[in-house]
Length: 395
Length: 231
Image (cartoon, rainbow over all chains, first blue to last red; front, side, top):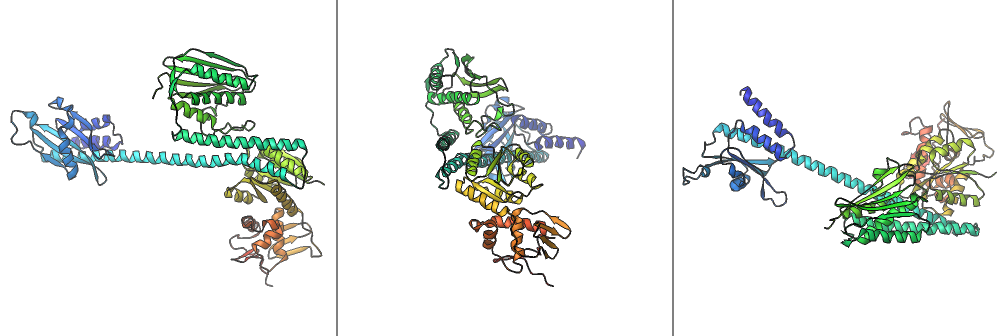
């Protein structure tokens, strides 16, 4: 073997050693291969994972008859044959084809692409009007076939590894979910049990004020428990996409006005400054969106009590942007990206009761509308929640 | 004098619940909201019993138990969530005396507190010799002190009471139920986990090699005993 050949093979090996099966990388391989192995057209076929049909994944006309690129069907029948046989095959043109029409004088060479012992596809070369493939050409092509098999095998392995990682992460999330939910459920249950058995003690008597205090705690914790269960069910339905959303044309300014009115009726002292532009209608579920807006109001009331709330609605390009601005204590920077995660609660946040599900549910609803929700905050100066909804959010 | 109990929990509603119930029994109550505060409170004033939650910010219940054990053998009851068996064992391993599983009833809480305080009382010894020896192990009943050879050994109140059971019954097999009833109280008679952990801790402290114990020996399926020393 001469140095030139060795370098040639090394280049092919290098390209095949990546696990990159993109068109660009296959192309690089084909071009490198063609330096010593001449052909007019090449096509790579792979079996579809589900249908098992051979699908063309790469085709290139390099030499004569560039128009043939469009019609990649030229090698399909032969590729099928190679896959079935599972070995390198040569096919000469049919003897009855006219000698003048070179394009019909197809000399084909097909190689199986393997993943382990399984044949997963084929690479087919064609030379129009010859020359026939000599032994040396066949050997180079066979080597190229092995290298390409290696490339696809690596890619398949990488893909499998990624799937496995993904699965592991999902399982971890599930596990975390179970442990968090049981802890969350146990907290109110512990109070209900503890305070009710205190009242039931026969060896002591509580004054009326204490009795009332304990009963109120039991009542509040029972509410917290039932809200928690409701939220868990709803977030599970949202996640599994089984919570039906009723999409219909919707005026957001109207929805926001309604919600603001309801909140004002409940909290007489709340200072809401709403600037609602008239915006084009969107396609959405009014009940669910109202739930999101109410949740943001309730959060502001809980975490930024006594702060006025600015509510803005405006159109920006082909999107509608809603902002809830409070002047409360703000959210620590490190917590900001996490507040929309299921069960996340800002560390040390114990004075305000919450389930850690509200914003998660908001995010799920907004995402179901193909929108975005996020928050910006400066500790000490307040928090702004943004919701962005596309005007054409139709399904 | 009223016993002073330190409650450590980051949930204000648990602090209120524990405090209200303990006060009806005439206990004095001090509170802390995290492990660090608890250790601080502890060094400020004498404490007779600690009720310690596990999940807390800054320093959790395990960390706080470990730190308190570095300088005190005051009984500690760990408050754990149901099902967290590992937490219970870990708490006992770190030197806690008992645990209370959330959610608990008020009467259960008070019963445990009473039982643990009772165990913490130094047992009164009647008409005996002052010293007990078993191989290289030595007990001074009058001062409730224990030595391994020349080395003084620091035991929690519960561990000391458990050791006394063996010392008073050398050569006699004690069942788990016997030990649990007499050291912890009749309501603990089926709580084998707490006994296993305590025996293991005691062996760690007393035996040359905890895996081949000489002082506290297991008789499979029967119980434990302190074997007689052959003259």
